[in-house]
Image (tube, rainbow, N blue to C red; front, side, top):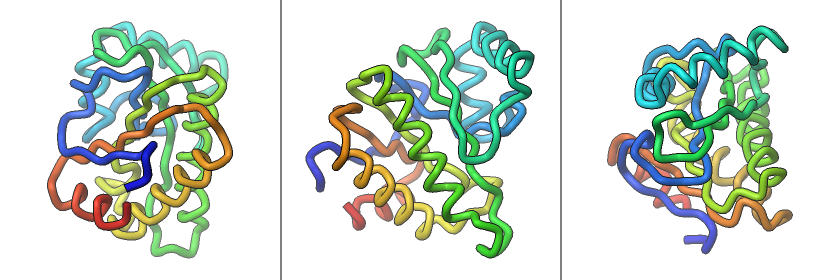
Length: 171
């Protein structure tokens, strides 16, 4: 396993890190899955921070990322990124997912974050094939870490053992 990447099974909302990444929707409204869990755990300060981003810039486009406070989370901050909805692979989904990882990591680099944790972006209700998503995530993060010193470490936090096995096999 590359020295700066790890995988674990767990609840990303319980992880103490410089930032956790939220698999958000473009409106930054909190929804289902990891997005809803992060919003519930962070409390109202996160909803207020997201409302301010919506007011300033209208939300967050697919492939982009924005930074907010962590609220009641053990993580100091939340990097919200919007992954693509899977439409069969012919709508630039793979590149948009790569860009979601790169955009999140660029924020972590610019803020010199030591530890950043990612969920399995786009693999829930957005329907991205889990195997392909794992390949893209590991390649995008690996390429970024090969070029930059920050973040020092990235953890892929999988909610279930099935996803964790996919990441472990690829690392």
